[in-house]
Amino acid sequence: MARVKRTTKTVAQRIDLHYFKRPHPFRRWLFILSLLLPVLAVIWLASYGLARDNHVYSSGRMAPAHAVLTQKCGACHVSRAGFFSAKSNDQACLTCHDGPIHHANQLFTPECSSCHVEHRGLARLAATADESCAQCHARLRTSGGATSYARNIWSFGAGHPEFAPLRPGFTDPATIKLNHAVHMKGKLLGPNGPVQLVCEDCHRANAASQAWRFPIAPGSPSGETPQAIGGAAVSVRGEKLGPPSRASMRAYMGPITYANQCAGCHPMPFDKRFTESVPHDTPERVHAFVMKKLQDYIAAHPHELSETVSTVMLPGKPLPVSPRVYRSPKEWVEAKVAEAELLLWGKTCRQCHALDYPAASSTNAAQPASLPVVAKSNIALLWFQHAVFDHDQHRLVSCESCHTRTRMSQENSDVLLPSVQTCQQCHHSGADGAESRCFECHVYHDWKTEKDVINQLSLTDLLNRPARTRTATTPISSGK
Image (cartoon, rainbow, N blue to C red):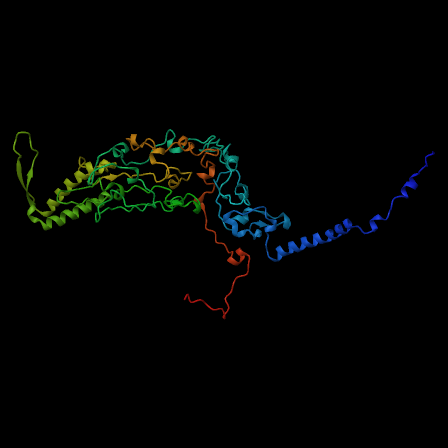
């Protein structure tokens, strides 16, 4: 049978060219949705706009410190070239926070948001990545050329040098003579019998509330005002070391004072007629104290102007006794003051302090000035000048776990800080390591130059909602 010949025209005539004009369920729904979805999107965006809720544009959850700004994007994102191109800048951060520079000779200043990354949920903004620090400290260069700091530090476990007080050439500036090995021995003579000292008897945090074990006797003249590390991690001698968020009165050990730690076992008697000690004060005040005590005493006991003096007893010979009569109370006081100060300057004070006498007087070159000059104690309140540390966070380990050389130390020049290797036993990378990133111990901003920021943002602006007002007819609760 012959095949029917078909042309393109005849084939095309079989196709319905008006199919799209006839109704079809799929096309109907497509048309409806193409109109409905944009309308719903506009309504959705309009609802957020009317409610002043910018959460729809958020890149993620805010950090707890900025959570109140979750719906106020404009507080940080300052629009310049258009709404959708608004970015956070340093000026927005400095509105609330004064972020002092790191060093005056740094080559560049990174943007706030490059280190403190927001919209990461519950992450701490201060928990900066090591890369933020390593961008400079891995190959440290300064605008001034030479630097005294280590030049190649990548992280605490890579390139971190030994702590400065433990490096060769460091000298402890303290002048107080102290032998830790002797003080840690058992059965030491205490105020009420043999004692065994422990670290906490002398070293405690500023916030410690327990009574000292061997303080000065109540009513005794101490002559000193204990100097506390105000704000601990925040300031020392008025210099800020860290941000207020790092403040802790338990972070650092309080300063050693004679009244709190020493007086109980090391009294300072000056004369057998008195049970009290001299005040732990300057030689001038000690001299005045002794003079006053002896003047009052001889005025109440004038019969002691005549006394018998016992000389040194020799073996096998009776104790020789010689009478001595003072011509006036003034002569008696001068003699007794000289005896008391010979004991004080020659033995009692010299046990711990470095004493020096000024140049001999012009009237008698062989006779030095009567009062010595006591060298400043210079006991270090802080050993880490460029880092922060918190003893309170390390309470789960014993003191000697880190300060391992304490029981062997016989010289005050021994620096008993733990080495960097001791810290790295716990602080290292990995799931079983404590936090070891740079921010744990170091701060970027130089908080000594921080300035107070006075912000004009009101609660109404902050919370982004109208303030509540009380009308005259609103009843006020009486609390009953």
